[in-house]
Length: 224
Image (cartoon, rainbow, N blue to C red; front, side, top):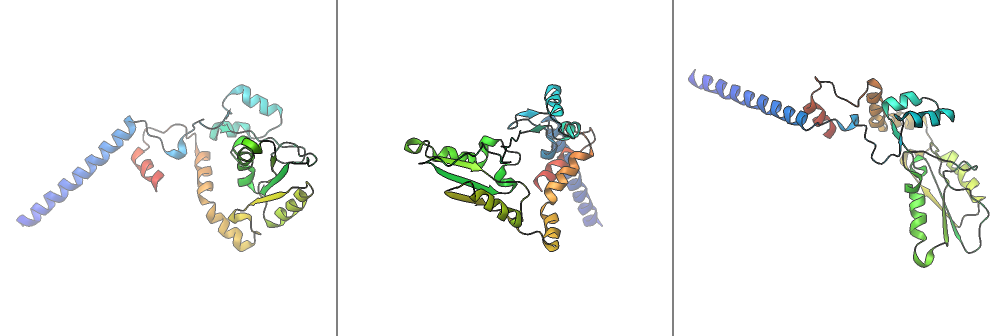
């Protein structure tokens, strides 16, 4: 009986110590102002803030839809501009003699969804090639289009050939394949992380945590 009593006392002490540690950790996270990664609305890289009334009115005048939802849920953005050829790139004119023309094709990764135009890999490549003695000898055009899979990419490739490129770069992503029903079923699984974040932002205003939300739970979930 004495050994069982001692075992019970040790178990109780361990449980109390664990609970105290968890409570102290929760307190430290609260004092540090911890917020789950997915809940944070930080401007940082993005140059557009849809919570600025003047910015919202500017885009509303251009006919953009769902601005109020975007301002509430994911307010920070980059602007995408397209040429008359529907490329996220400067206008592509006649091939100039002595200049090597490079055309980049692909889907949204190459087009640069969520990335400023100057930071897409096509524009970075353009700057890297035109350094030193090579300055002015290269032109790189971003001819990618979001959402394209193999059939559409083939048509895009033929369109781009009409622009007389010397080099075509295809940025392949695993979801570029023809989307059969079997592939599409797996695609939903691959997109779970993105979709879950989208649902999370739609549920409520995640720019602030409620007093009863456990920061410790959120901290563990972030890392899981």
